[in-house]
Image 1 (cartoon, chains in turn yellow, blue):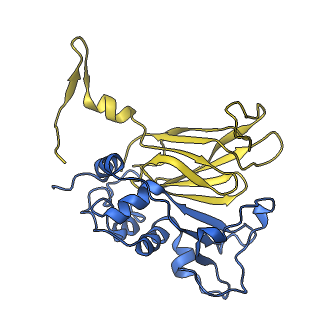
Image 2 (cartoon, chains in turn orange, green):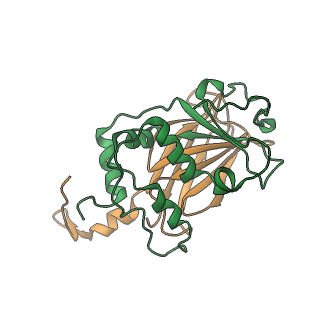
Length: 128
Length: 144
């Protein structure tokens, strides 16, 4: 593996620092299912998923974050349905605890926690 | 340093290694939350591929030392020299130490079995009573 050391990127008209790109990149992402058995479809910078109960999944990182003040997204269809348009419009899905090494994602319908088919999660911030 | 940053090695590993679905899962209970259901740790396929290939992941000791480093301070594990290839069983043991609280795998002194490595086939696919799952105390053999 070779290393290219570049401070700035230029597309012919605009110059930006390379940190502009690295700071804005997702530091972790994962696509997983929670129905039948929790399983990762694909991911980056994830070491494990921990199924902690119905709709409760902890995503643990391989390369930790520098601090717990990072940001991210979590989408869940909050439904066991597998069709592209199967989602519960009354769903809520969100993060629980944040630490430098993991984040907790909860899938919830209008009335109860649910093991959802579609779970998409990513984090942005500073790496350790 | 020739081994670079862990982040860069993960990116390189993802580009060249096929994901590996582990044949194991880790069941565990948190002794500080006796009413909580058992948890199931699922190894990430890309992480497992990196563990089996070697020269990607840092030594487990670096993660354990970093647990004592305050947030925002420099951590050791991203810059440590990577370890060599592991067997799948060694990788599971590494992952237990990394991703499960030491209260479960190191400090617990009670009589209950609170952690088990099991073949994936032993995890129920019917999740109707998921929040009532506990580790069976009748079977004391560990699968791995």
